[in-house]
Length: 182
Length: 182
DNA sequence: GCATGCATGTAAGGAGTTACATGATTCA
DNA sequence: TGAATCATGTAACTCCTTACATGCATGC
Image (cartoon, rainbow over all chains, first blue to last red; front, side, top):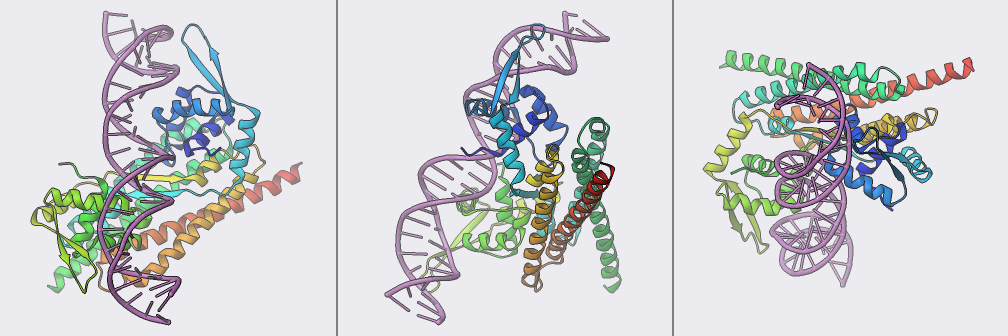
């Protein structure tokens, strides 16, 4: 049976430790969110499907009255996760509205380009900040690969912010030249 | 009336010159594709909606028998495009399966991590190649911002490929150390 | 005559978000 | 007592992809 992309996030998270749907959502939001998100609308139905396929199993935990189902991988589920991890990744996608605006920015004498670049720079800087806030949360017991992924996120967005900075500077210089020539 | 994301790609492309739906698709595939794609299933229905909203108008071009509708912006459409360009961009998204695998790669002694990194590197290198192939196509009459966007794509993917290279080297070094210690 | 490219479109379905609904528990 | 958090879930919707259907035109 084919599994959806979200299914693998769930299997991966449950591979770390047994968790409730709520736990999974919170962990995703505090870790993979910037390159792979998941909403309740995906998580809860998918947990059912995975349980139906025998890849995970849920244990009801009364835990002082509040009802809560903790899910964990079955042997099949763990096998499935291992297989997926060993395969070559496929999906790599970006959607960047700022680049789109930059692409179309001819015709306003550089004004739209400058504002798109400035906004894009702010976007990346704000992502860097949010990722830096996550650093202490990951720092403890987690795998070195989780740290590595976080570094990637930070460095990649720093790179992008600096690229914007350079582009803004070059654009300003060209416009000064343009004015002098005119 | 709210416009869909795809609507703005179409307005933007028609802002350059009048085009058929087929032209738009081809141009998107040869330019914005890596950060903003569009399929026929979006383009043709959206062209109708935009025409219905009075933002574009279609001109039938018999052009030696083959039927073809060339769409162009109306005054309203051009206004709408200018307004959108002046607004701050919002959407910035990534989906990167290789990072997800890296994140979950504890437990196989670095094997899954190494293969995810190698695959991610190849992905970025192949994107760089494809973007370099586009360079001559953009080089002629197009706006300097289109060149800028293409440079961004190339440099960003080069950066990512190099990051993977470094991570692979560090991982290999750690494993040598690990073996020596054991 | 046939493959390729031009050209327009639809149907079905997958993936994902948002908003809502519900209710218990904990802590100030 | 009231706000925040824990916890589960669904419905409606948007967005997008894939696959298919159709047919003309061009060039080998």
